[in-house]
Length: 85
Image (tube, rainbow, N blue to C red; front, side):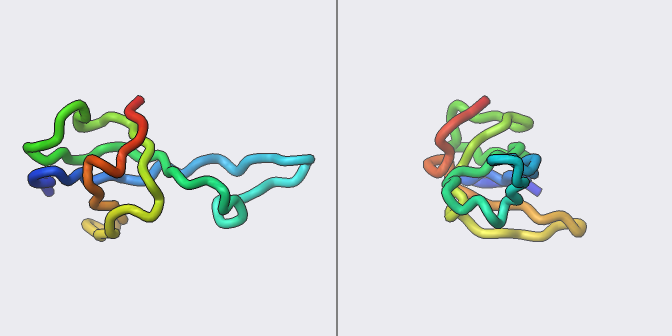
């Protein structure tokens, strides 16, 4: 599977539940967070500054889901990435 042009294929990294005031909040309960963390699986030829295996933060409303080999990935544009670790 190879991304093309300005697209990235990202696998979401599940975050551990956060604890607030002794209560454990799951991802579905924490709706204030706008960005998700993911591992870059494939990078299009026009993308600059992001490489495969980088960890990125991207807008959770960006892109579309795609399923390959029973794994769910997100296909996003490079402009949806806000942080590269």
